[in-house]
Length: 231
Ligand code: SF4
Ligand code: SF4
Image: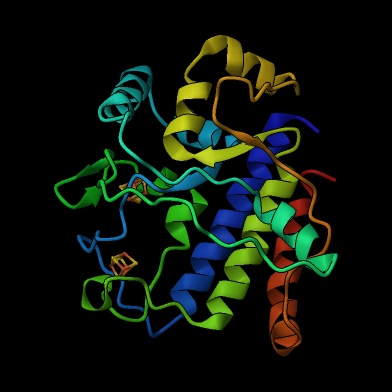
């Protein structure tokens, strides 16, 4: 499976998810509403390649330079991938507590309250939606159905990006910004050493609660369409 096949599958998944969000009529999300844009965003390496490939050389350099600024600030760095958590749940364990620190800094790619690379943003940004402006409650108000759909997309994106890695956006993009590291990733031998990234895992089971299984079927069928690129 080449990286181009995986990128085609990812583009399909983004399209399907964006259509799903367009179908939701109860979202408060609007352009220039950006309280959710923090440096805590996570992404996979495949999404990092998708993002960087959409930029020319000068834009890539500007993006990496923006992320380097304030790179010493505290940000969320996941200890588990979504599929690792799914495997723990499948085996009867509780999902690990999200007890890691989330920093309060704004995303460095935010300019004048709009994302500087909106069409290329990772799934972690796309799936950040809320029924009320986040400023009202101080957090996003996401219903259980949307959380289920988000989890299935996160699992699928991780699944198709193997062997690849997962981590905070700034760590993923800085790793991919190194030519030697990106070449190793494209060759299917990325190393997590000195990157603060963790390794993607296959989806052991899709985490869809019984109450959402029937409603999920048409979305799963559309996801499956995208997986034809990588099967
Ligand atoms: S998730 Fe919250 S802050 Fe972000 S656009 Fe939606 S309502 Fe605004
Ligand atoms: S990448 Fe864009 S959408 Fe995502 S947090 Fe940063 S500014 Fe917001």
